[in-house]
Length: 65
Image (tube, rainbow, N blue to C red; front, side, top):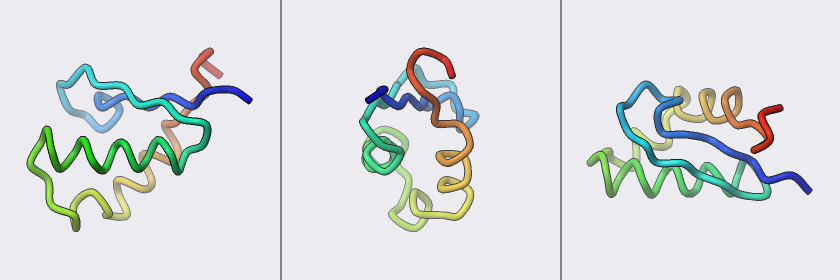
């Protein structure tokens, strides 16, 4: 199984954090935690439709595909 990759910069932030997991859902859980801890976002913000859409469209296989 390929590792999924999403970068904080995919959300338009100047941040070097990267998130990896076996599934988009695993990656999204890391994104939510990071958003609240590192960027001071609320649970409502990290669970927004915009975040879900970016995660769904920008998460990719780590090899670039």
